[in-house]
Amino acid sequence: MDIREINDEYSVSGQITVEDLDQIKALGFKSIVCNRPDEEEPGQPDFAAIEARAKELGLDIRHIPVGRMGLTPEGVTEMVDVLEDFPKPLLGYCRSGARSTAIYEQSLRLRG
Image (tube, rainbow, N blue to C red; front, side, top):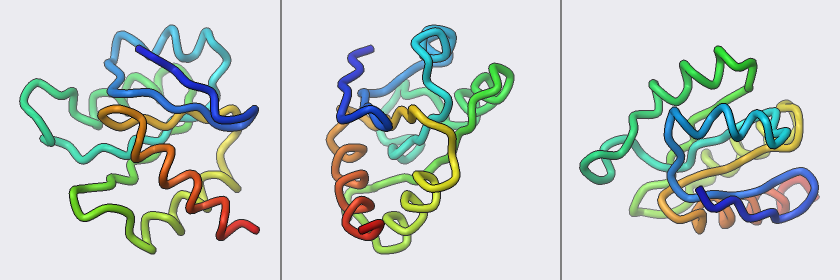
């Protein structure tokens, strides 16, 4: 797991696993957003499995998949809602962290 801090409220990572969640919680993250569609590649953990364990640990979590077509206005709006409503710090993840960074940057433009 390679977590990269964007700022005090938001960091990004490549794909996480259920086993990573205890460490994510121990690092102080309060919320997680997944920007990776399920079944993007073989062997990828399903969001539902990560969501179940995150909730057991008391972490807020949301799935806002960013597929091959890129960011959508609806996805960016949903990300704005997460940024306004979820406790911080927040960890966004996808395959490499790039989509999680891009959707965050776009949502900042909408937040003003």
